Length: 385
Image (tube, rainbow, N blue to C red):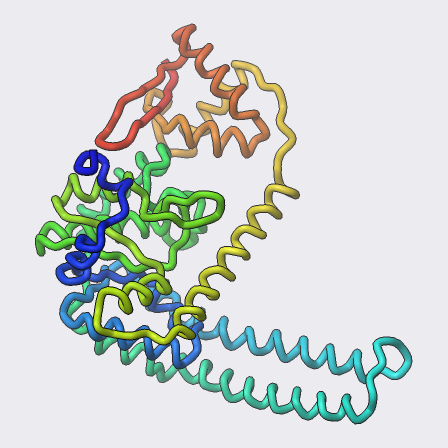
C-alpha cells in the first residue's frame, strides 16, 4: 500500500535523513523576497543554513526571474509600512494630547510617552533609510548572488514554454495542481504569468531527472494547489503532486515552508537554530494565513452571489461565450469543473443545478461530456455536440 500511495504517508525518520543527506534543495522566489521582511537576526540565520547546504542548493530560473521582478516593490513596500505606523503613532499622540475630550492622560506621563514615540520614530527613519538604500545598493541581493552563483536553472526555450502553456490551460481548467489557483491572477503585460508555478514545477521535474536526485522545495506559497490542508492547517505536500513527481522522475519530492525548513535543519543537520528565529518565521507565516482567512471570509460575506434559476438555453449560451473567452472553437472541449464552479458560479448560477442541467443536455445529445483518467488525475470536459 505504501509503495502505491506513498504521497499519503509521512516520511520515516530514515527517509527524512536520506532526503536531507542526498536531495537538492530548491527555493521559491517568496523565500528570497521574505528575507527583506524578517529581522536581521532571522535573515542571517536563514542565509547561514542555506549556505551550509553547499552545492546542493538550487534556484529555478523562473523563481530567480520572479525575485528580480519583485525585489524593488518588496523593498519599497516595507519602507511604506514604516510610514503607516508613524502616521498611527502621530494620530494616537494627537488624540492623547487633546485636553478637550477623553481619554485624558497626566502631563508627566504624556511627556514620557511623547519622548518614547520620538525615539521609536527616529529608529523607524533609520530602518526606512536602510530599506530605501537597498533599492540602489542591496547587500541581501549580493549575498544571494554569491550563494546561487552557477546554481540557477536554465531558462526553458520558447517551444518548451509553449508546451507548458498548452498543458497549463488543460490542467488549470481541471484544477490539476500546482498553480491553478493563479488562474485568475492579474496578467497585465504578460498573459502567461499565471503559469509561473507550473513552470517552476516543470523545472523541478527536469532537475530531478537530469541529476537523478530527489527534490526538497522550500516555499512560503501556502495555497492549496501545493499543500494538503484540513481545517485551516497545512498537513503535507499534496499527495497527487508527490505521486506525479515520482512517476515522472523516479525521485522523491518534499516541501517545507521557511519555519519548518529551519526546524528540520535543527533535527536533521548539525546546525542548531535559535528558537526565537523559528518563532519569528512561524508567526510571519501564521499572520499571513490569518490575513488570507480574513479576506476569504470577507469575500464570502460581501461578495457571495445570490443564486438564480437558469435554463438549458442559458447554459448553452454561457458555454458558447466561455469557449470564446478560452480562445477555443465551439467544437473544442473545455474544462467542466472550472466552467461550472468558477465561470457559472460567478454569474450567480447554483453549482448543483448547473451540473444537473449539463447532464440533462448531455442525455439529449445537445452537448458532449468527456470523462477520462489522466495519470493520477481525473479530467472532465464538455463541448457542444
